[in-house]
Image (cartoon, rainbow, N blue to C red):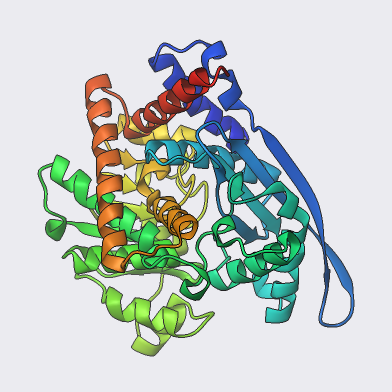
Length: 416
């Protein structure tokens, strides 16, 4: 099987071909600009020293500083981080914000660490990458298994290293440390806006659709709640403990409140309390619904299971949930897929707003942030939709074309 980065390149090359680009036009976009591998030593609670492997990749800074989250996951590796960095370059370009793409990660299951060990690891990682990042060159943020609290630890470590206060070096921070109102909900809210917009394009109302959501973390849980509040019926959800399905619709507001009330709570705990049945975690993908939102991890929809998906619309809340081969199957089946670099761009859009507020030291209300997010992402969606219609291609290819054109044009203006 090809690597994740090679799969990204396959789509990028196809988009470039459709635009009439030769390799010389975009060869630099195929390669990360800089890659840093670090060993992160951590003193454990029992006194032992453990060394964890980490990375920070800057894929492109052609359109502005690199931008991208930091993830803590036991399956994270160099290939994943460099692919995520490339997707961030494309995502920021599609959203028309002046950023390039970056990403960071440590190979660790954070659930195996105590809170003190987690803090020591977060600070040790930041010390290793501090000279590599900065408000004008590379701006990290939360990602899988990282939180605003962890960003606060990292920001404090960076400030001590720099010898001054630099709130703009990290986004997704707590409000008290210069974070933006609306940032926590931004990615899920962006998914909701994209689902709403594609329903309009298909002549439907979001109130009339049934939705399945894989993953009940920040993106999936908040996205499900916001779509529920828009009138959609959420008929299937899942997390690592399994899937929960109900064709009559689930009480998402209650479920999300239950999961958020205590760290470590899972759907199986809610089901046990309510006397509900759980099924295999993959069942959510095959639910009888109109819209499927994969909001978990990469490579969830593959060549082996793509034909089982009943939803006519797939809205990628996660990064890379659909493999290149599965993409072809879904497209041939006539399904609409809103790609990750568009669908989950709400988070980086509001991270950009946070950065702007930090640099200006002037802060907006949550309503102002949400209105600006809605405007930015709906304009991006319409541009991708219109190009897909004119080129008679998938929304993913259209999004890649929009992104690539902006990066290539900017590069040429700079003489690259």
